[in-house]
Length: 266
Image 1 (spheres, rainbow, N blue to C red):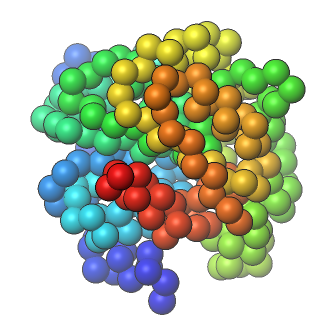
Image 2: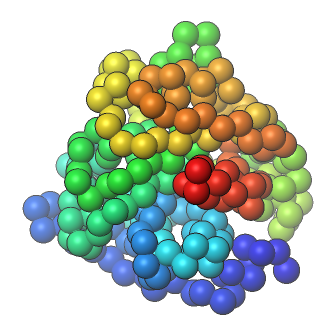
């Protein structure tokens, strides 16, 4: 049994649904692993399953409160028409943070979730104290566009997403690759290109500690893209994760957690 599987067995999450008072038609399903200091984990196009194991590992290692929402529209959930962009979703999450009365909150976002974490930081909620962007998208970097994942076969997607495609959860379970992105939900928020031409200039307004972590073998957004992300955020720290692709929380979760915690202790 792996450390993540063991953590999941020890700490089943409490699943709840929050209806946002100012957006009566918006509901967000949240797995809440309740300890102390809060972390909000923001998944990418592969859905909440790409963050579940890491959420439990983080809770067990840090004794923290870990919340893992499912973005509306993913994993079969409903998406309100009022949520038509990444910024719309960021505004909804700031409201969720208020509804949950969270404070000293650290955001950890992967892929699209990394972009979402940046957008939440740009809303300057006093309840958010730090941001971790893991192989994020959203930025336009000349010569380094995000790979268009639409229409890719599972094997092709795994080859781009993992340093070792055999570590893909579906490959381990059934001899095939995965997880596949929820393309319809992803495009609804991120657009077909998964970029925003205004994001680079806006990132300069982030006034929180930001740690940008990147898998050296990421075939969705490469290392130069990651360095450009960090360079656009004043005072951010960049860490390269060896033998890791686009989903460090799935492929090398222990190394990702160590990198996050080591910087927090420095």
